[in-house]
Image: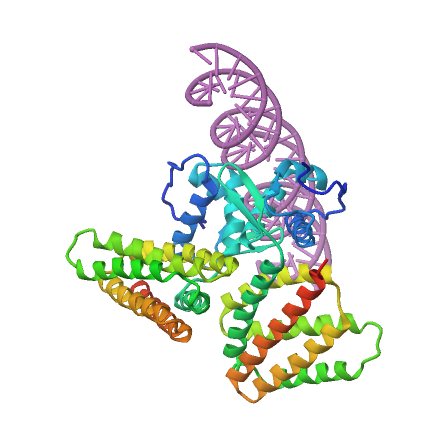
Length: 228
Length: 228
DNA sequence: ATACTCGGGATTGTACATAATATTTGGTGT
DNA sequence: ACACCAAATATTATGTACAATCCCGAGTAT
């Protein structure tokens, strides 16, 4: 009956950027399964629970529709779209398509020096194994890596779309957490991709990227939907 | 100085779906070059010119940001992003990526009968050359074709993204108009893709689709940015 | 010349009105 | 008594009007 969990989400939402915060909260709620498919996203209800006004909520909803987790019907508001293993796979499928093409296009367009530097930092991380805040570092490295390729692909729009999907992936990551093993594997795969880029082998880079995304996709799926 | 052209756009905008109409108008304006890069999209100004209130305009703006033609800066509102030949190419590049993968995935997932039927209708169109409303028919055929593949690719999200890009392409189409020659070529390419699908040759279908999108992309670019 | 303040303009958020849809209630016919 | 239809009511989406905050630039004083 209740549109959102009973948790009384009172606000420490910083003035300005309300919309963004609402988007992230709802994303998380949907991915966690608190908001299930078909649930009506009642504007006033959400506004009350978040302790804010309706306008930012409405704007958040159109953003949610844009990222494909909610759906508007005219004069009937928004409902949440299904989210489960299949939808997670779909997300990573899209991400794979986008980032693969980005890697292909970025090949030969990035400065060697930049690549070498990044590779060095990553290699260092791979060795410096024991540090307690390794996860954080790896997190940053991961982001930089993917952003570098996206930014260097020569298609600003493609970079934007990748960034859009990064929003979703970040939300997933918040739920899944940072598994050490997954991050280590990711690091290896990143290195392989950089090597392909350094070798000016676009197709190899694309292939490796495809494998990389697919692998993290299945890893995430394992964690999120451990058979119950 | 003026945020939008001086044209006094008075409204016959039907109640409900205001947002959508605003989106389309602004899209058209941006693609036509009336709104150039960096122009501030002042909410109140647009609301006045459209004769409506600010809320739907604001929602339209976040939608425009989502489709990548506007950009928000916090507490400084939205500005229009650059649009020119390069950006048009970027759009068709994305569309190519998406639809190519859709074709690849749809191969073997569509009912033969559906394909055969569609092929028959298209072949009929190819023959029935003289009709005066040929353009309209072709238009519908085009849409059906691409929607069929998108819907049948097995990834609802991919279908959604394709639909999102269709919004952009439709806006472009409104400006470019329906060139007979382009449509005829498109029809041929559609037939080739269907044949590949019927032959269960996913890679061929993907290839043909890539060529098809690329070809219409360059055709559109020719028309829109005829060297001046 | 530089730093500071103050004012105009615009974004962001709130409160309210209107219209459309869903629901419930009451009546009617079988 | 029960099913079904219709009108009234409640809920919610959509749009309008308004207030507060924020950014930027002009003017001024040091």
